Length: 94
Image 1: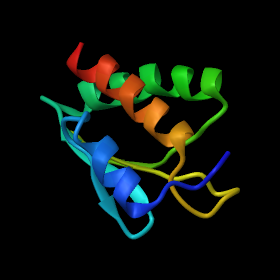
Image 2: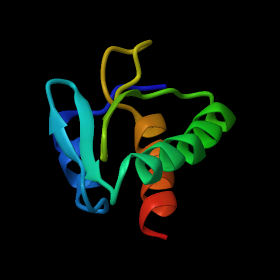
Image 3: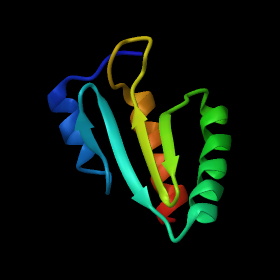
């Protein structure tokens, strides 16, 4: 997997609704109605992460879910990260 350039990353971010490029990763922060909704969404995302063999750095505080994606093997953002980000958006936004 090849590390994307900043220009490639910024171009690909245009196709996503809620992601930003920050310190070598793409990140999003999402709010839900309550903890149960946030955690249920995390569980749905977790199954897809496992299927794709790609696991985010993420955290959950009450109704907020923070997700950070990069490919540790190459030390930056790759197509693999954008594939998972797109899948996450499909889960969240339908």
